[in-house]
Every structure is written in C-alpha cells, then in structure tokens.
Image (cartoon, rainbow, N blue to C red; front, side, top):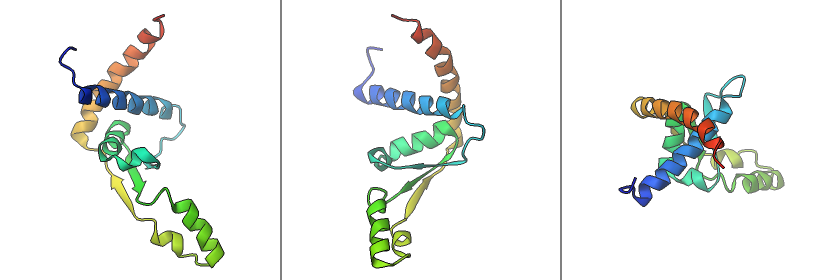
Length: 121
C-alpha cells in the first residue's frame, strides 16, 4: 500500500524468494532437515533466520565459507588434514515456532496468488 516503506518492500522481496525456495523444495522426495547456506546472503542474520522460519528447517552458516575451498587446497599442499576443520566454525539458525506459523499461513496465500499472477500479460 501507500504506507509501505523500503524496508517493507525489501522484506516482501526476501519472503517471496524464501517462498519460492520452499515451493521448489516441495518437489524433493525427502525434504532435508538442515540446509547449509553460503555466499553473501549468508552474512545477513535476518535472511538466515527468515529461511529457517519459512522452510521449517535449521539453516547452518559457516563462518569462513568463502575461504573453505582455498583452505582445503592448502591442507593438501601442506599435508595437514586438520586445517579445514579448524576453519569450519558455524552458526545454526533454528526455526522459531511463532514465526514459522505466520509464514505457513503466508505461504498458503502465496501458493494461491502465484497461479493468478502467471495469467497476467
């Protein structure tokens, strides 16, 4: 509406992406109980928590995900198998039951709106 802020619009865009991921995961035979998130978005705590809440799964984020491939290569060169493990500290985001319930209802609305929007020219 006219009172929507930039923050509201950004949150709506992120929720739409999260709902699309959930929709895609619905095609899996067995949904994963945990998801590992890497890349720039993994640095955003709000996004990580939103994904956990929308997907109903824990989301694990490795602190040094961007350097893990280089560390793994260095461990081969240095012959130090313990090197990657020392860099694999992670943070786990667990679904919040209250938020998940709100997102479950919003997801049902999303599923209803999605086909209606596809008919627009």
